Length: 136
Image 1 (cartoon, one colour):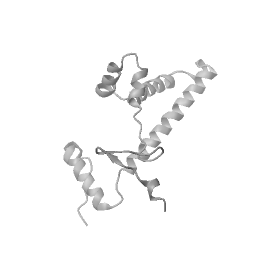
Image 2 (tube, rainbow, N blue to C red):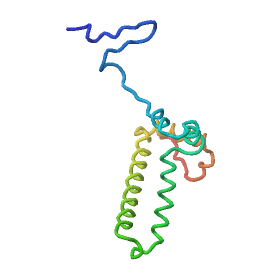
Image 3 (tube, one colour):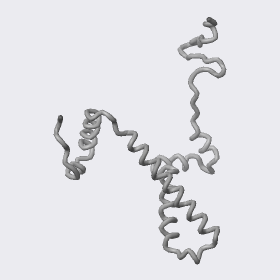
Image 4 (cartoon, rainbow, N blue to C red):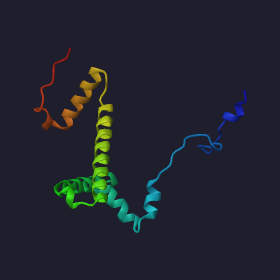
């Protein structure tokens, strides 16, 4: 066995990884900020107002609602196609959100009960919405 190929030395407390070894992570936010005219404003908007996803979601909801009020005959074929695409994107995003939400729910009843109790502790206003079944 070539043990030295799997050896990553430590120098002054830092692990030194050979090329193509070790953890592979990349922070893309700094590259996004470097493209912004004012990176400080960009960071504050993302931190204090809304993520890109929330911003795009609000625009999508508004545009979809407005497009629904326009008669199809008043739209060009390009506009109808764009509206159909927007509806498709929105449906797919909603499906992904639902799948990810369901993935967070534990399969084991006791784990699910613990999660539910933690949620009710943090959000007591939800307690009256549905009766909790007793243990067992």
